Image (tube, rainbow over all chains, first blue to last red; front, top):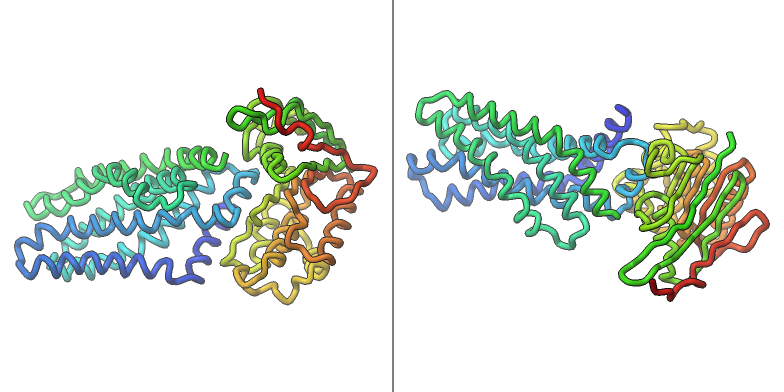
Length: 222
Length: 211
């Protein structure tokens, strides 16, 4: 079981390393959206500090949606998904591996890059750190919800907009909590509650999403 | 171990009409089921149902007396399916692809791997990326991983498409050898001649039946 998990993860990461555009483009996209807000809003300090966590979170959500759309499509086209379904290993286990690969390849680079953008949006060190932690806690939830969406829309042609319609409403609670981490810090409160809740949502999605995604995949391929 | 693979009364309905009805067969080791029919007769659908990728409205499929949907792990541990899509990752090399498929269950020996790749003329391509290969070469990579998994039941949907004559011939021999060693093959192909140990199902006969 563990070998299969590691193998699936390794394959996905190898694919990404060999096709750098796949992970470089989302990073550039993320940076650009944040910069656009920065340019548009000008250098008005107070306004920018209030908005910057929102900007970063929304940019993060959008990037995640654009990248997750293609997560399963390639495997579907190549017939790899079919082979997974006729393998003796449980499908949810492979979904879990796939989600982890997505998180490592598409979420982690954005999170690592976030402080640079945070400073350019005039956040302080502590605020950046907390925003980073809120992204770390919230991104697994995004990933797992995204995986469900991606498997559901797998056979829909050009599913991009549809996927966004499906997922964005589900991302609202995560967005609210993620942003309020920094907002409450600005109000000199320590945002333990928001972080605990974000972590809780992530754990919850992790426990049910692989099963839901496996079921959705079966429906899509049947 | 005596295996048996059986389908009873399989019917698949698409909209208002049946694509096929009351398909029955029973296969023992060394037997091959050859599914025939014109384009659109439902060959691929039938194979997908047999592989458990689609579900027939009626009928049961059993492997070792167990329904395949009741004990999927047991069935999938013994069955290899190759459909229209090759099921290999284009960003990986043939070697990595084959190793992915084979390391888990039955680790194949290096000698075996090398012999098979020589037969399929894949040796010089071993460490290229699969997206650089031609359709036929990719097909051969997929067939090689199927063969090296050494599962007793093969379900093959048009395995000879895109293969050149020599490779088709080689694969035919490998199939015969597999049957000879007590394997079971379910095959849909327009390119196979009749043989004694083959059973037939012709889906064209029953095509326009309305329920």
